[in-house]
Image (cartoon, rainbow, N blue to C red; front, side):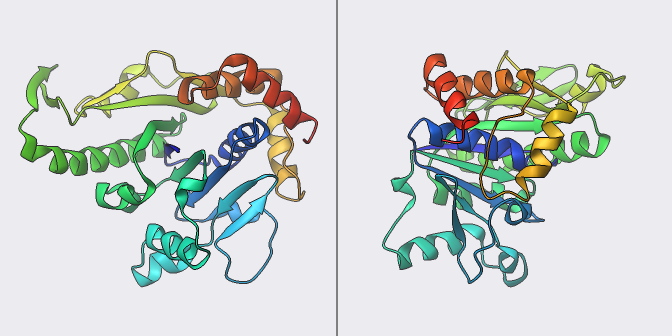
Length: 268
């Protein structure tokens, strides 16, 4: 099982659904977990009623509807583990688990352990100041918790960069960065980087930009009202970015991904 953790204080529901659809079209078992505050995935999947936390949607499973977890103190992880236990199932039945996170509580390592080892950390950002600054807080919280775990091992060292002390070693975090949506902007790259300069995060050289396109927005809105998730109608740029991203965060080859996208576009 590969666990992909998508961190970001921005809307990314349709992004994960598109990724999940492509993986499912490649004959993989996929679970998407809505670990966001607003729990918006329930508005993009069929409402089957009852107390089911996991809904089968177009050949993949989507877990959403955890409002009680934010009011009762029960974690999303606890709720899901209990749900699968009642059905004599567990997370290991899935090939890929995609988790959408936009708040700090889900980022504690003791809670992340319930998902299994995270295969890839993905930061989803955009040009909005709110997103940029909130993402810095999310990363800071995650690193603080990771350092607590690694602190007793004594393998970290200090490195000074532009006057800021960074802890390097086991607490370093390797991430993939996505710009969603990306726009032609006036926000300086220096400002963006300054918000996380004090954090020991290393981004992979290749970054992924999903430029805003009205075609994509139309598809994402229609998805909220249709019972099937299709990629048909997405812009060529977005389809290309989806393929490149999946190649970077999974072990699937380009040919397999392209074939899966073609199948997903046909609704298979």
